[in-house]
Amino acid sequence: MAVYTQVSAERIAALLADYDVGTLVSAKGIAEGVENSNYLVETSKDRFILTLYEKRVDADDLPFFLTLLDHLAERGQPVPPAIADRNGRQIQQVEGRPACLIAFLPGVSPGEPNPAQSCAAGAALGALHGALEDFTHARPNTLSLPGWHDLAKRCGDHLDDIAPGLGGTIAEELAFLDAHWPSDLPRSAIHADLFPDNVLMLGNQVTGIIDFYFACTEIRAYDLAVTHAAWCFGDNGTGFDAERSEALIEGYESAHELSSAEAAAMPVLARGAALRFLLTRAWDWLNTPADALVTRKDPGAFLRRLEFYRAADPEIFLP
Ligand SMILES: Nc1ncnc2c1ncn2[C@@H]1O[C@H](COP(=O)(O)OP(=O)(O)O)[C@@H](O)[C@H]1O
Ligand SMILES: N[C@@H](CCOP(=O)(O)O)C(=O)O
Image 1 (spheres, rainbow, N blue to C red):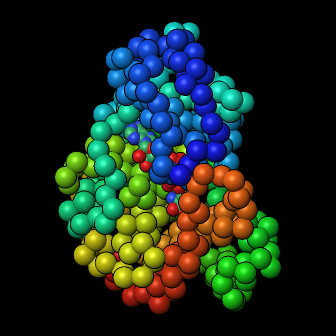
Image 2 (image 1 turned 30 degrees about the vertical axis):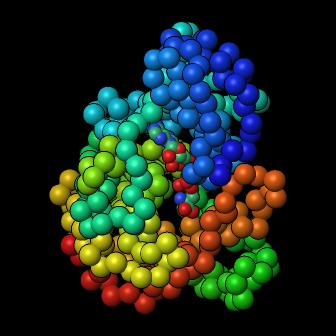
Image 3 (image 1 turned 60 degrees about the vertical axis):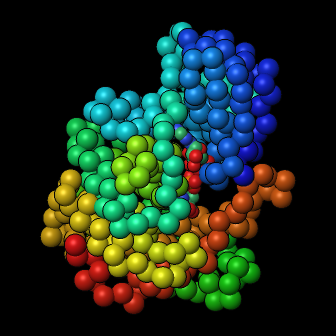
């Protein structure tokens, strides 16, 4: 459960008093998620999400994320904008943390996506990229190749406590990516963390895309690679699902065509995506405070994806 910071009902009621959103009816901590503290807040008028930003979210980046959400919402994308209080402020301070009250979106994250849901997620990502073509704000990706080197160095020898030989595998992979990471593909703002738990669906329809707190300016096709790594395997990283993979890429291309250079780079981008989540999960595995109400995510699930991508036929990325 991700609640790092406890917020009392009295504090939430006082916060709501600054908004035009009704009065507090109920509030409870949300079990899902690992990055931030989230509360589901019900008022006399509506439902909202109260997010307190923790861990990797830098308060200075919040204006970028909120501008991105406003941009997408204005273009009809199913994203939750932050609500402004009566003074027009979207960012508050709650229990010493930056915090936002966010629109609640309907839908449920697919536990085991079927091919139709994967196709819809791909199409939603393609539509998001289309809507971001005229987005001019930029945020460097702190979790790109130099950031992966830095994380690996900071985990150091402890990587081998997670799995024997993990440090060596990561060093080898970093050397491969240093030599092969593409430098000339189109870049744009990307979501960068489009896991099934960040997509809300009703049936096979996408009703919400949430959790933009890793959004950054990056190689656009890397976003598809992240989504591929997140959607096309069993939870433990085994059981590559070729049907989901085809559907995801087909869905993406129905909304936003990949150039031949982007398609050719997918095998390398996917290896980078697998390494990125392997490293952040490894770091969290070694550093999550013992008293945090959070379930750590298994780094091994992304080691197995990485092993799959290292051996995979590049044709898996063709629709
Ligand atoms: N705008 C929203 N509408 C509906 N549910 C939401 C919304 N934002 C978050 N949630 C719920 O809260 C959970 C955790 O949110 P998330 O942003 O993924 O947290 P974290 O940043 O900690 O990973 C989601 O899985 C979803 O159930
Ligand atoms: N998606 C990442 C962790 C970030 O958590 P999220 O709940 O914000 O998506 C992972 O699975 O490692």
